[in-house]
Length: 408
Ligand code: AMP
Image 1: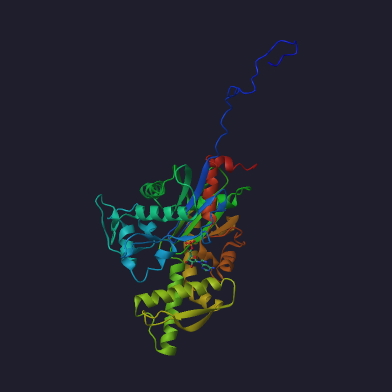
Image 2: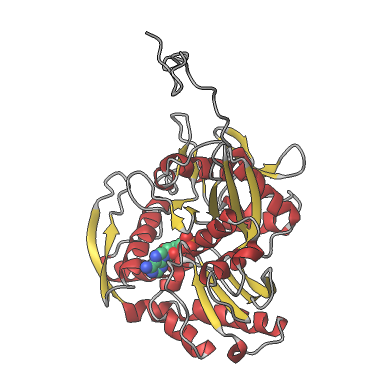
């Protein structure tokens, strides 16, 4: 029997009829964004102020790409292990020549420091001549970012990125950095200066006038005064040394240890490149341990590269490393003097000092920085992640000035 309405009239049974689709507005899809610090030594990616963890642990990937004789491409830690045994086909520090012309000071300086077969590419760019053919630095950067993207399971395609670049990069080098990110399949790319990203990471909720960013990484030292009183933030003085960083510390310690083992055991660890590189890596491990303890042990590699196991231990103390690195640290402060002068400021005018770069954990360094500026540097954010964290904030909020609202 047909159902009736309240007046007793028959009505159609509509229970089996699908109601007209009501067109609701599609819920806005959240815009996926990431910040990328494509560093000379390491690369980190962050989303919404959190570093993206890699499968297998950690969030910091060495910016290294290797082309082994067996074919294919290795990236990150696996690539770095090949550095000493196959230096010409293991590309480290490609950022130093990203977007660099063959005829340029970047290229000639790079050739003085690295063993690569760097050649003039088809359009006058500097390119690596490797076992895998000619590879431009942009390609190396793209491989590093794609590798990290895979390890962090960051989706391909619809993700918008902000990548950081040193203040000293000209437009050509910034474009090349952005191009490396596009090649790693991001939907859009914007570039932000590294010290601005660091200041952003720290000044999310407060505001001040002059901040100093002291950034000592694996291969480079950068210093910048950032004017944070107006939006967008501006770098009003910057400088540094593109060939000064943790790598120099590791080599300095390794040479010191090599002298000691030569005197103690009669072994010359500096004679063979592969053995010396193993020693440098062992010294780096000990150096890192010393930021949390007074003494560390350096495992001495065997002088026989065919049997690389450690064949002894040399102890090293924080004080020794502090002494060994004093010159290097003094050089950074000479550059800080220049940067402050450029900004017509004195150290006492600086309201906050932000540290970036893993080498700011060097024994004793934070104390020297405190004495220089007369105030304790801010270290509450991990110095190896702070740049990508700041970039992730800029990426998440396209109008950076909005983010920097002092009322926020
Ligand atoms: P970055 O360029 O910021 O990725 O920093 C890499 C450099 O930081 C390398 O030279 C590392 O050896 C160095 N580094 C990392 N952790 C420490 C630590 N705990 N103490 C001293 N140097 C460190």
